[in-house]
Length: 376
Image 1: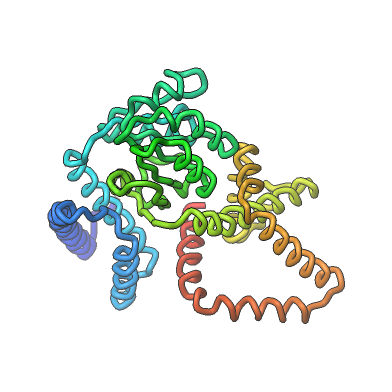
Image 2 (image 1 turned 45 degrees about the vertical axis):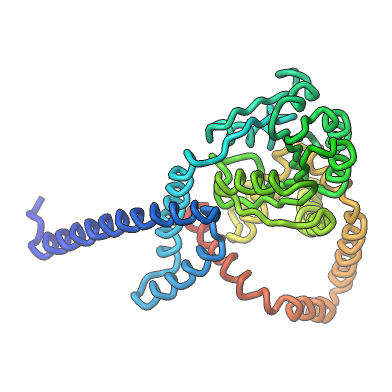
């Protein structure tokens, strides 16, 4: 092999110098992050601020464009830097967290098992019961500071009615189901007056190392002390918390869960009836189709009971399902009749409704599709 050309050696030396400067700047950034963590801790602010991250990333993408950098490079680099910053902040603040005992009813699998592991790894004294493991639910509830009810939706109210009277005064009972009105009413009705009540809904599946960038909805029930403690607990592990009334939460879940899950279930059902060759279709697939098919497959890789409960337990589900049926029938008639104008008219009506939402949706979907094209 010939010797390395002098000009290539000079370029490699310049790259090495640039890389060393990047490392120095990353180290400086992490030093500032540690100072930020201390400042946030004094003010009891969460380590994750979605608005701040989104605003900063948008500004950095524009700066990258000025220097000829694609937005995908900026997003990839800063996704890693932001994640490292959040992790460093959580680690620095962990020793200062207020500790209390936690009991998880239904803590052997699913969301209960996930939260039990995360809290235990964070230094909390966590006891679980469920599926023949541990003490009875009533015994666990009687001597834990924070009692978490993490059982299937259809069993939640019954479990609350059984264990809430056993929770000791000064403690707190919470649930983690995707409905809030009925569980909150049960906790308030059956827990003694000295027991505080908080409703929670982790808006994600039980996977990952902790709650980094995940959303958790909180509903006030009874008392302020434990509401603040539960809020800080979730935020300490990286979650973004959102406060809502139980009725508002359930109405939003009808949109976010019922409507979307029903749509996904219908698509999967149609594919099954067609006996579609999914492997072959992926060979023709655009990134959008691959993403949609992945979400369908993800749903049907999980438990039927969970999705049946989501679709049938929400009090607003029937109304939204009826709208879904009407709109699907409207488009089906137009397709059957070859009525192009009806499709165009309805499309434009929806586009007008979504026009203020479109800019955000375009950025988000572009980022998702870019990632699918690079890694999918």
